[in-house]
Image 1 (spheres, rainbow, N blue to C red):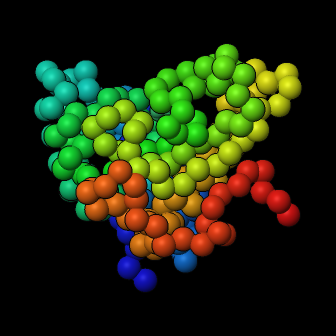
Image 2: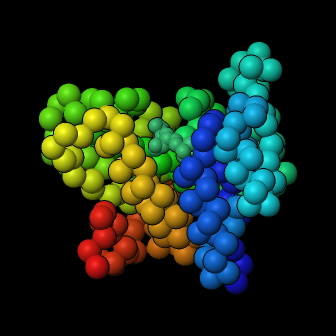
Length: 217
Ligand code: GAR
């Protein structure tokens, strides 16, 4: 089986990267991780990637004069690694239009809300403030507009009485760890793609591909 070569961009803990790494260890999984790249040195996720035997790179944005030259260096590293798809997993940098457009349709992100609700940061705090009953997470193709690209897969997570931003975040993170590998599998098996021409992704999915959390047994 020819596997899709994916790179994962992180900035910290890297627990979603870890979930992707675990999924790709299955010999039947249609993607492999060729590189984990961080814009911050010494973060937890880098050590975790090494534990999985994955190549790591640090390209510290602080060492570059501007966003564009940093992103050019990132692209060069991704190309060197042979990456065909880039997965953002807690990569806390706004990406420039040049980078986003050059990876159009091959750049995905996980976000801790049911998009298009709660783009940006502090999603759990804002969800609780608004008193919503159903929260969740989304994986989407990345466009130049923040957290606005075509949605690939989502998981709904109910808000329960007594939830704090922390308890909600913990439950959603658990859902993220199932959702991201699922979304990667959908792309690697060519059941989801985005040509870049419309606001929605092209899907060839069944009802079983729709993620639900917690899963009914
Ligand atoms: C995850 O919850 C991810 O959804 C979020 O950052 C966390 C990273 O955790 N991403 C964003 O908020 C992007 N807008 P991790 O480093 O343990 O995967």
